[in-house]
Amino acid sequence: DQQVKQNSPSLSVQEGRISILNCDYTNSMFDYFLWYKKYPAEGPTFLISISSIKDKNEDGRFTVFLNKSAKHLSLHIVPSQPGDSAVYFCAASARNYGQNFVFGPGTRLSVLP
Amino acid sequence: DAMVIQNPRYQVTQFGKPVTLSCSQTLNHNVMYWYQQKSSQAPKLLFHYYDKDFNNEADTPDNFQSRRPNTSFCFLDIRSPGLGDAAMYLCATSGLGLLMNTEAFFGQGTRLTVV
Image (cartoon, each protein chain N blue to C red):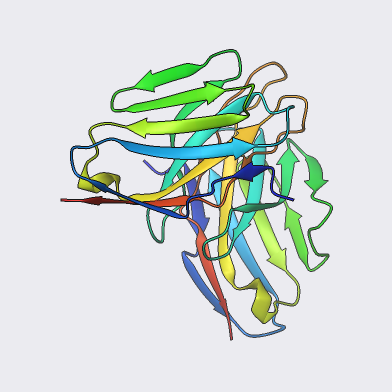
C-alpha cells in the first residue's frame, strides 16, 4: 500500500523550460514533505521541503507547491538545466508518526540540451 | 566534507554468507535509518534508531539485524543473504526533535551483490 505516489516514472524536458514533477500522498497524518534528487550510484540529496502549514516554498530555481485538500504536491524547476537530469524522490513524514520518512518510487527527469 | 559515510560502496557476498554494512556520521544526529532500495523502486525503510531505541518495521525480515554501538556508528547485518537481498542499502541520519520537522541526510549507499 503506497502512501506516497509518483505516477510518472519519467519526464523529458527541453533545457530552459519548466519541469513539473508531481507527487500524491494518502496519509493525512503527514505534515512535512521533501524532495530529494538522486544521481546514479549515489545517495539521495535533499533539495527542498515544505511544511503542511504552507502552500509554497521557493529556493532559487526550485519551488514546491502543496495542496493539502488534494493531498498533492509538485516540484517546479525553472529554468531546467542538463545538470538537473536525475531521479527525483518525493518523501513525507509526520511528527506523530514515528521518525520515518516515506518515499515515493521516483521520477526520472531528463533535461535535453 | 562527507557527513554520512557508508562503507564499502560496493559489496559482493556469497549466497548465505553473513555480511555487514557500516555507516558513520559526523552530524551528531540522534536518529539513524537503514533503507533498502531496489531498482526503480522507492527506498524502503528497514529500521531506525532513535538514540539507542531500536525500531523495526513490521515487514522487515528477521534476516536483517542492526547495531548502533554509539551515536556515530550504525551497522546493518544480513545473516544469510539471498539473491533477493541484492539492492542498494542507504543509511540516513536526522536530527529530530519532539516538535520539529527536519530532513534526512543520506550516505552514498552500499551496492550489495549476492552471487
